[in-house]
Structure formats: structure tokens, C-alpha cells
Image (tube, rainbow, N blue to C red; front, side, top):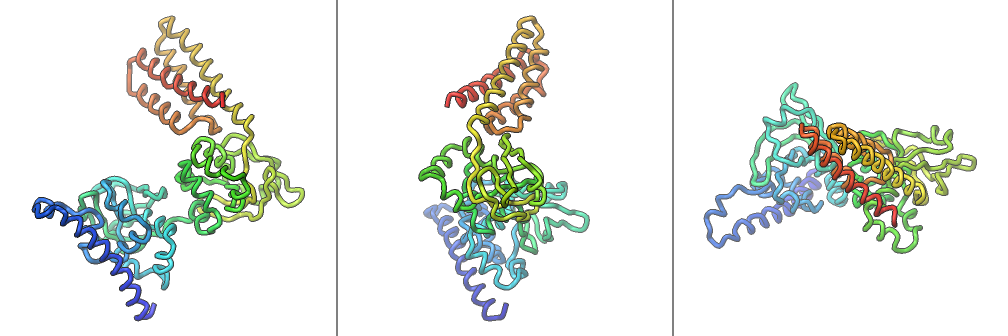
Length: 403
């Protein structure tokens, strides 16, 4: 980057950073002369602004709409790249990122960890999970490295967390979410994944194969369908997981298949006699690689069979009915521990089911019940804890079956 471009860029980010700093200073001055306010430790934004060497980072946070997040109660741990760290990026990179808030936001979230992780904690870890959903490797064999960056200063305290200073900007892995975001034609899909709380799952190790509908594919749905789905989390989740297959299934594998079982539990039909079709949708692009799987682009949204979902719901109801019938008989005969064990097995069966008929809420309740009884030696109490969890799940399945 020539000297003129460098000066222009620095001026741009410095002005934005000054605005953030000035806003922080103004907020700090709202105490009407109360000296106790000025003595308080600044938040992460204020602390970074005072340091004077995070101008680009603060400008980036403002451009990505993350200033309020970094000023929230937290606590948050920020691996903060200095201005020198940003200057190491290829010429024009910062300008492009400032004009692309989504990509910029993803990069910044890759530098933030929930919680207060001090240096003494960092050196004991092999990985930390960022608020983006991806993890950062930690290497303490020669100093401390987080991802590809060296930690050059630690434990810069703020009122809502801590800053560790790093000498390079961390770039997220090109996982399925980032590949879809970069493509620019999957905005509706990405919005839907966020609404269904599935973004994190598709950032995990996988691998996954995603039959990804474009924005145009979603636009083919009847008016109001997308808006309705965004308000119905469970139905949306079922539809989205119907587009995902476990494992990396490349185009050369797809054409050899007649069907593929999805994470939703039902299988999609595959027809390679004239191009490749998944159900009634055409595959228009194949083998878009990501670090945790592969994307095949489809021109229509895939919709699971209502009867298939109903079958899964009924199967879960029958499992609970059998468990309660057997467990109640054991409990009434005085075998409380055996009763609890039957209920535990049923709960684990529900959690291990491949379909998505059981919601995140029910899964959380069942896991909580299992964790509770694992720490208790009171077999009577354990039986009732597990029975209560199964009853709640059964009520949910019954409600779904009546839709």
C-alpha cells in the first residue's frame, strides 16, 4: 500500500475510532461531577481506545456494529490485534472488510471468547471456543500463540472482561457458514440457520454435506412462507436439517446413490438419470468445498414429508409409553432403582434418535435430568426426576401430533 493510501486509511479508521472513544468518554462524564464514576475501570472499548494502538480494531468494531456488544456486561475475553497487526494484511484488505460488515463481523467475533479467560487460564488450554462458533488452537510450547498470532501482552483488565494483545489478525476457517456467506447468494439460508440456532452446528467439525438452496430457491416458495417459518423454530429446524447429510458426500458419490439420509431423519431421493436431482430440486453446482464438508447448490427448497415427521413423533411417544408402563410397574413393586434405570434408558434413546422431532428444549431437559440423577444416590428421587422429564417430552410430542 503506497504512503498516500496508508495515510488515507489511517485517517479513516482513526476518525471512526475517535468517535467510539469520544462516545465512551462522554458516557463516562455523565456522572455530573461524581468522582466515583471517573475512578471506575473502563469497558473493553474504552480500555482499547485509551491504549491508542487499537484504532483499526475499534473502527472495524464500529463498522460491523459490534461496539455495543463489546461494551455489554460480558464478561468477554478479546484477543485484540494492534494497528500494526492489521497493517500486515494484504493491501486493500482492511478497506474491503470495512465495506463488508458481515464478513468483518465474523472475523471480529473470531477474536472474542465468552467469559473472563486470564493468562493463567489460557496457558492451561489447548483450544478456546470463540463467539463465532469456531475454536482457536492455543500453543504454549514457545511463548503463547493463539491460532496463528503471538500473544504479546496479557491481562489488560476492563470492567467487562480482559484483553490479550496479539500481533496478527486471526482469520476464521472457511467452514460451511463462511463459504456460504462469501458466495453472497445464500442470505436467506444463513438467516434461517441463525433463526433455527443451527449456525453453530454447521461451524463444528462435521464433516457435513449441505444441499444449499439459493436466495432464488427460497423466493419460489409461496408468499409469506419464509416469514412464517422464521417464526416457527421447530418447523424451520426440521426443514433445514432435511438439507444436511452427515459426512462429506462429493458429487462423484452422489451420482451413485438412490437416496441419502438427512440429519432430520428422513431420506432425500437422488436421481442422476438426467443431470442430478435431489427430490424435485436440481443440483446446479457441486463440490463447493469447506473446511468441514461440502456444499451442493440446489434450485428449490427441500421439504420433508409431513407423514415422515409424524412417524418419528409417534415412535418417540411409543418409546415413552412403554418405558413408563414398565417403570411404573417396577416402582410399585418397590424396585425404585430399576424404575429409574428404565427411564434413563428411554431418555438416552430419545437423545440419540437421528430425527429432529425432539426440540432443543426437550433435549436440554432430558440431559439435565440425566445429569441430576448421575450425581444422586436417592433411587426414589431419581425415578421421579426422570419420570417428570419423560412426561414433559411426551406432552410436547402429543401437542405436535395434534397439529
